[in-house]
Amino acid sequence: MNAIGGYFELDLRKGRHYHKDALRLNTARNCFEYVLRARRYDKVYIPYYTCEVLLEPINKLGIDYEFYHINELLEPVLSPLLNKKEAFLYTNYFGLKQNCLKDFADLYGEQLIVDNAQAFYSEPEPGIDTFYSARKFFGVPDGAYLYTSLKLEQDLEWDFSFERMSHLLKRIDFGAEAGYSDFRNNEDALCGNEIKNMSRLTDAILSGVDYSSVKQRRRENFAFLDEQLKNTNRIHWDLDDDAVPMVYPYWTDDASLKQKLIANKVFVATYWPNVIEWTDEEMSEYELAEKLIPIPVDQRYGEVEMKRIVDIIAKHQSL
Image 1 (cartoon, rainbow, N blue to C red):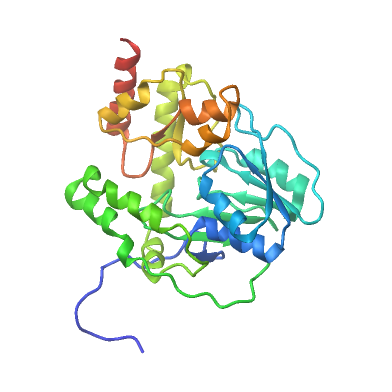
Image 2: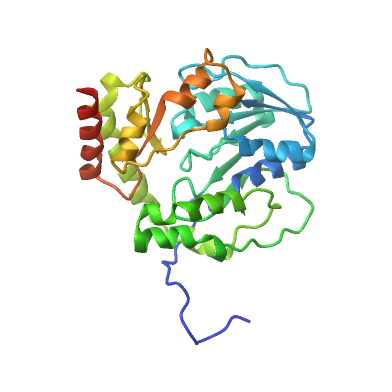
């Protein structure tokens, strides 16, 4: 029985999940593990240009894997023939490669696994195992969604998130720098966890998001940056009508620009440092990891912040 009365819990808006028909699990890598277990794959093809955490479930289950290359359009170079116990993992980079995703869905059918960790708003292709990460788009410590037609025959425990909230709370009270070490600790704490149900805390936060306004703001910010920066961006982007980007990927040969942005408190990440270790300098993936700058376009910001970013880049390039 739920308690009535007493002290208040965190006051959150009651709504619904965007992925209301998906399984709600604790992390995207565990969604990947769920699929690998349920399908009983012997081997999976994964891109060089990906986060190393995806190797965690592969190594845990002792599954064979093989890397494949992508080109400068972030699309797979080759399409390997699969036997019945093999899968092909496709990454919908930055939420901007839905059309390419559809081509591989037609090619591989249910042997395709779609990593939509960077594409929260991308609709799943029918019959295709597809997973999402919530914390790439929203202020939550964990949480993921999985679409799959197979279910594991095991009861999943509930995850708990209250001890992973400090970086989110500190950023509000003290600013981004104050919570960064807690953020890194939270990232480390997500390693090695068993597959669990999404925590009730994360569930409550995600059910209260205004998904429509988030979508609009991200698209507006992306469009503004692209209009200002497309002529100096090595990669061209067409924002489809239903695409919602995670970031604005700005590919530049200026190795010093990333540090210039960070010095001006525009915090941009590297996707992904492990790729530089996995690849050689002549590979496109190496260049992407080294030179592609993911500029924030998320719902916290508007035209004022986008103009600030553009001004920093323009002044730096004019030097």
